Length: 338
Ligand SMILES: NC(=O)C1=CN([C@@H]2O[C@H](COP(=O)(O)OP(=O)(O)OC[C@H]3O[C@@H](n4cnc5c(N)ncnc54)[C@H](O)[C@@H]3O)[C@@H](O)[C@H]2O)C=CC1
Ligand SMILES: O=C(O)CCC(=O)C(=O)O
Image (cartoon, rainbow, N blue to C red):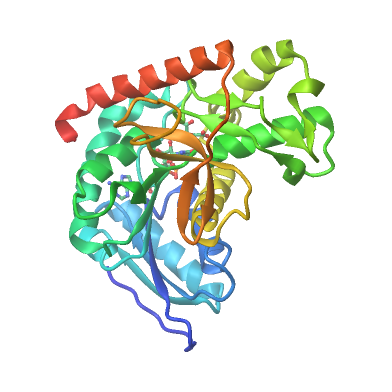
């Protein structure tokens, strides 16, 4: 299936954005926002490349999504390629949001979908290598996101490994919201210098030890009992809580986080710290190399940079060790795909 539509001309050249799993629930929440300019800015026209499984139901649903995108009459949307052909989907793309994968159900951990999903990311890494621009920026959302991003990078030798990132932003935003709720911040945006380290899983370490609200230390205004027994488990288990409540996994908040992840990477964070899953090679924190790990970063001119100099206390060191161990176990389980 191939659908392309032109609307109007502009002096700014359109960029190509691939979204996999485009007919899924995150895709449905994500695509109108990309087409509206929320991800790449209000002056940047886009051509969407939408990939779905070669399955009649999935492709019929995708056709419906394309019709709705047309019906929104987004001025920045300069074309839509809707396809189950992976090379067409990644042809000359500047950005790729790899969302399409099997979500976990109630009672499962994210690592439980590793076996089913890992193979998808080998194929997609290879196809990106063959068809995408060498400068393509990749954000992996499909779970387990960190390890999937590592697999895709390992199968795309012509694209810099640093261009493959995984989404930790939902965890970051969840943690910001919990702190703002606890301390009655007038806006979540007042919470700064928060970090979510490690894996997008129940071993992640949401770390508020450096966080501030309007310059005031968060850690000094909350007790350790709340941090360890409420804040950290709430953030770590939020995905499961949403699956339990909705019957399906988070979609609106996941799409929002994907938009924020790519927007900040491309347009910059103005000095604010955000959490991104990035290759651990050469990191200043002594995290084992060869992993895809959530780090604090700032972004400028389309590049991310790890924020240096943050400290972990003994509790933090233990948490970091656990999340490294889990990522290493995931890596060992997929070594045949690397
Ligand atoms: N990193 C994060 O913070 C989050 C990750 N997720 C993950 O995102 C993924 C997608 O979630 P939903 O959209 O809710 O799932 P969904 O099941 O609603 O949609 C997934 C879509 O991907 C498609 N798909 C599956 N394999 C594909 C392939 N090889 N190529 C192209 N399309 C393919 C399916 O046909 C389906 O339309 C899941 O793995 C989920 O666990 C979800 C929320 C947050
Ligand atoms: O939890 C899951 O497995 C799916 C959604 C997700 O990753 C999340 O909400 O954090």
